[in-house]
Length: 59
Image (cartoon, rainbow, N blue to C red; front, side, top):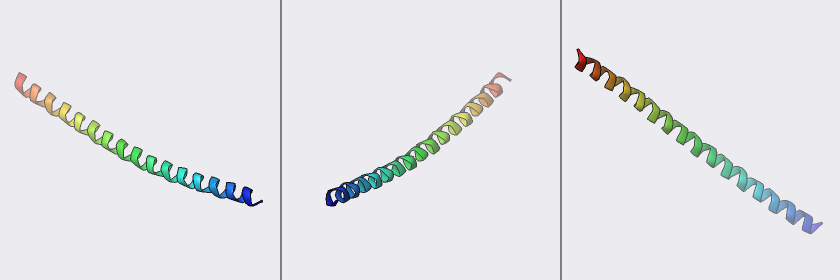
């Protein structure tokens, strides 16, 4: 019984650590997603600005 309790405790600790790691990874992934959204937004703004400059240059 003592051995089973020890195995259960070790398993619980491992599960807790895994859950914490997964939470950390989720936060990091969300942060990366936000940064990619910012990069895409900046790219779209640059594209619009370049198009406006080209349009003015052609007139």
